[in-house]
Amino acid sequence: MNEPFVQVDLHGLRQDEAIRAIDRAISSAGPLTYHIRLIHGFHRGTSLRTMIREEYRWHPKVLRIMSGDNPGITVLVLKELY
Image (tube, rainbow, N blue to C red; front, side, top):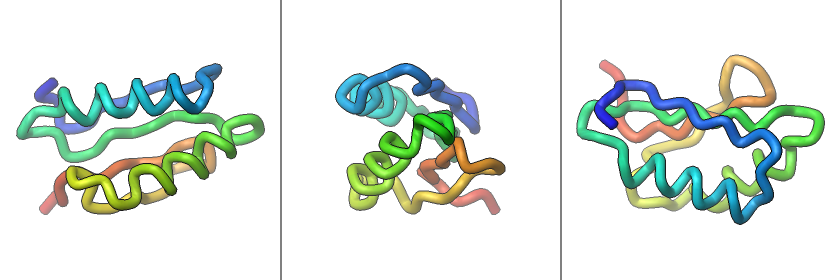
């Protein structure tokens, strides 16, 4: 994947399935990929949001984690946009 912004829809996934999907997105991110936008939902997705913030907080390829433009989205920042 060489897109600057990658989007992964996690709706309906269990935590272990979501981890596999996120790990795939991170490992296949190309040198031009800046952000991975994770759509986990809000009402039933809060457990995924919590898991993402705990599991990927210290991931070597993730610079930081930020909230998306709504509460159902979390963004993994792999590179800073200048």
